[in-house]
Amino acid sequence: MRWLLFLSKLALICNLAFLVSFVLRFTNWLDNHDIKAYIIIIGWVLGIIFNPLVVVCYLLFFLLKRRNLDAIPAWLMVMNVFFLFLQLVFLLLMNVE
Image 1 (cartoon, helix red, strand yellow):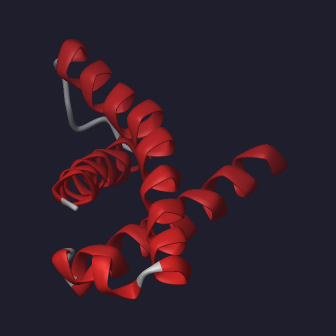
Image 2: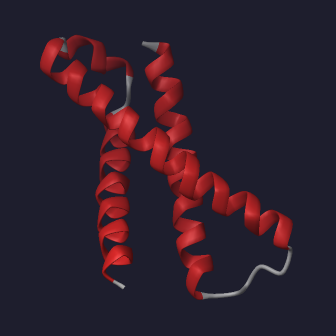
C-alpha cells in the first residue's frame, strides 16, 4: 500500500498547485513566467490526472478490502476527495463560459 500512499501525497501536492493556478487565473501576483507555467502545468495537467486516479483507487479498495486503506491517513483521503469535487465544479463552470 505504499504506492497508494505515495500517489495520495503526490495528488495532494498537485491539488495544492491546482489551487494556486486557480488563483493565478484571476490575479497576476507572480511575475516569473517560468514558475507560473510550471505551477499551472502541475496544477492542471497532473492534478486532473492523479487526483481522480487516486480517488478511484480509494473507492475500489473501500469496496473490496477496507483493511488496506488503514495505511493512508483519513485527512489525506478527505482532502483529495474534496479537491476532486472542487476540480469537477471548476471544470463544469469553466465549460459554461
